[in-house]
Amino acid sequence: VQEPLEVWMGGAAPLELRRVGRYSDGWLPSFCTVDDVREGIDVVQGHAAEVGREIDPEHFGVLIPYTDGPLDGDAVSSRFAEAVKRRHPDREVVCLAGDGCLQMSLQELGTALQHGVAIRVIVADNGLYGTIRMHQARDYPGRVSATTLLNPDFVALARAYGATARLVETDADFADALDAARASKTFSLLHLKIDPQAITPTTTLAAIES
Image 1: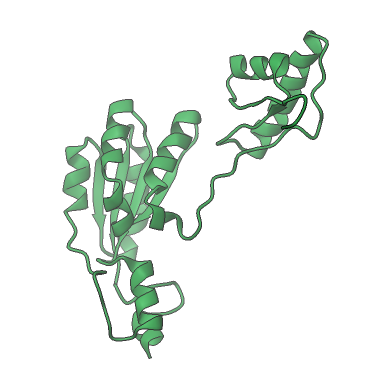
Image 2: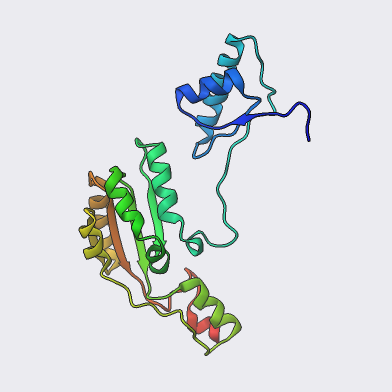
């Protein structure tokens, strides 16, 4: 065990930064921009100096969320977007989710409604667990297993949660729909209908299987 034991703290609110400066050996904030961290270090060091302390310059870090694989595969995109928006209510936060991803965390739409979190959700609906289906096409062509989805009406569902929602079926409709979603005072959702063959921007399922 390290002696003496170091105590690192997080937080980015003014009182939290004051606490870090007065009592902590290091600072590890989360959901912060580079500018937030740069400014926060100055504030922390200032509070430390007020009580005759100095924090080692190498004891400043930042927590960066990551996943072992696609973010949508872990069904955390909507929860992550809500966390960022609650930390930075003055910033626009957009959640990009697949249809399978969103169905794993639909209850977070209720969380957004309850806490007044005005995130923008864009759901790309191709009726598939797309990443898994792509792997099936690559490794087991012709053997499709449990990757086809029967989805709800995402627009009706989002409206039931109190969201501004719109179905987008053509490229030409997207710009106006996005403008309306961004102007919404509550959280908003765009339901994009995607061709299942368009599995990535550069290839199709048929091409992978061949």
